[in-house]
Length: 229
Image (cartoon, rainbow, N blue to C red):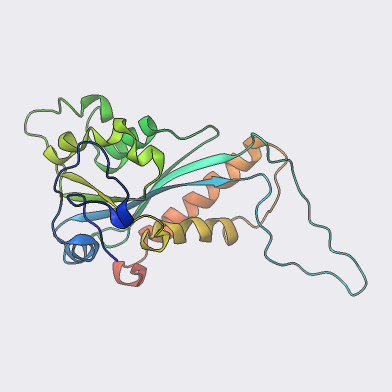
């Protein structure tokens, strides 16, 4: 299953405004270029963390009912925005966590500041330092979430391409192709043993600690062992 920024999106879904050709060859070719060191490849996505996290299983003595603590989740989520590079010379997990909604402006600034490392961030995208380009060409894989397709993001594709950064939209309904999904699942089910948090600051701290540990693990893992099918 492949798509390409310069072709109509899969399953008849209209593409974003300002669409233009990007890296040639579809998703498989994009991955191959990253694996041979031609360019960096980042998988970008968001995830929300609730004060009560999913409980897969628990134990209790025979005849004793298991009690699982639950907190009210209304307006108390912590949201994380992250990008995973698993095949570059130095694998890394970049992330930021906030206790408010993530919007298109935040996504664009994250791309410019954290991934691209453009001096001045998104504010300098239209007018970067003379001759400035990212140290290695870069493709950023995104799904079809509204904030990724927002005009604020898609109308800057020409500016991003000028400094060596391309956006690659996955086919609709294909989360298995976005490898950062595995990171979110590991953080939620393995890295946060406490399953309920009484306050947003407490949850935010737990998310920060879990993502910090996961980022350290990614940084010390060889690119070959991080590859997924």
